[in-house]
Image 1 (cartoon, chains in turn green, purple):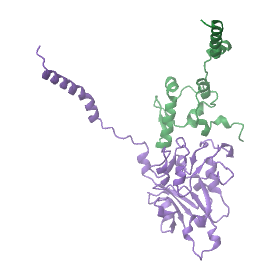
Image 2 (spheres, chains in turn blue, purple):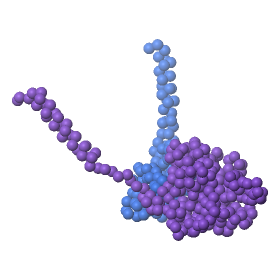
Image 3 (cartoon, rainbow over the protein chains, first blue to last red):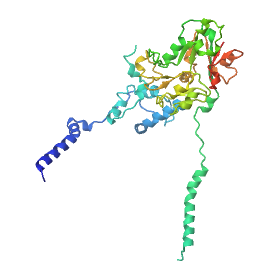
Image 4 (cartoon, rainbow over the protein chains, first blue to last red):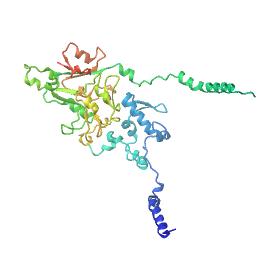
Length: 131
Length: 257
């Protein structure tokens, strides 16, 4: 191989640089990071079982949105026949009071952004800002 | 076995026919009815409308109780400039609202009297026809609704509305809201908004905030389809004006002389 003395160390250097983020996260222990959304201490059940919410909360919220805004239906019958008001603020955020401790935990980890809070206001957001 | 071409075609034809029975059955047996929205029928029984008494409204000069009440509960920002103004209910001088009522004998101060303006909740709303995303539509009870989620901010509806009832958020409105009402969302940049006839209050059985806030009871609200309702009583045998009725939008805000 011509110039093998240059090419091989060059390749090694290149691979090292490319995989640097992986090494860095391994060294700093971020590899094993698991998001920990904080669950409300005093509430035991959600509108749907945990597994359903975990996978389907986006479609659930979208269904709620369409139902409330476009069809004027405001009551949600949960899996256990309990009735809930379809409201992000009054139902969801009533238990999960702070989105930074709940929503953001996974969303930030997965690099997901949403625009809910451009318009909707979660109660904790205003604390201290308004009298 | 004697299996000629004719026999093969017969068997193949029968097989295809047999295979098509199930899908065919599914297509023709299930007539799926269009899913009606839950409240559609109940909503259609009503037709909300509003009456505004000129003289009662003019009793107190400079009064803006209805405007303040509406803008407070709906988180309507005070942008400060006329160009960026966001308004759900506002006032304009009589001569500007009803230019066709001008005669050479009309008193000048009469022309300058304020008239309350809001979305006319038309029966035939021009704004909804222009919306490319169906973010605005007419509800069964006649309220012209906005779905802020779907609004892309093209402002076609604003061009379509002959009453200027729609406002556009040129900037993030949140810093311009003095005190945020948690029960109602704010809007974001690039969204059109307008009066929603207080749908969120109607759902709770309350009357619109502006009607409630008026000390002089100059605003009347009710169900136009119910002959015994407050609004029908108020409109009975009165001289009524509507804004630009000649356009055929069938507005449901009545001005009562």
